[in-house]
Image (tube, rainbow, N blue to C red; front, side, top):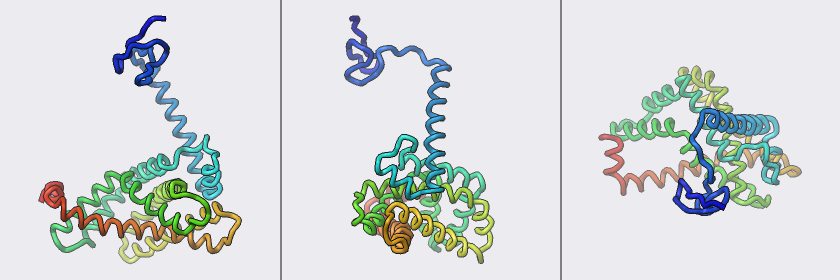
Length: 264
């Protein structure tokens, strides 16, 4: 059998794949047909997995997540990937409608009086809108922790609660995409902005409660609904507490770098 020199790591080997790095022995020039096939395969996989998961989480969230945790996973997109894609898609819609700009203006108008503090808040808010997936990666662990606290006797470990939180938060991100046009109109009406916030929280509370009631059936439905709804509330409280501890530490030890980042 002829020896092949791997074009990736220069290892000499026999067979169809390099034992060192795993690259194929035969690697020809990239053709348009090859690019098209790979694009089609990834697109089809994304569409079927993402859209199927989105539909299932909309119609039967708790049953869907429980089935996934029990091993029924072929048709679903993975939880963290779903959450990140859903967040990215919803933020694109928010940007297209101009909601992000409107929210930044509201933050600027209602923010701190100090010029330096205003600059920090504006820069941080703009960074969050430009990197929505990073924000989701911070929120998921805290909500998963509150989920684990409320339902630790149900037998799921922390990693499995991360799966639950990622799927539910991803679906709520898509929900915000559909309500974005109404949110933009309400944001321009100061008297109704508070009501919109209450309505959104009510939807989040009800969706989490509904999902957890399905995950942990049979059981005391009302108690599970309440705990499920409180999960997202406590998760955000924990996130704010964590940020209130992290930000002062960063300002203390990384003040020159932060000031350079802010260009102050």
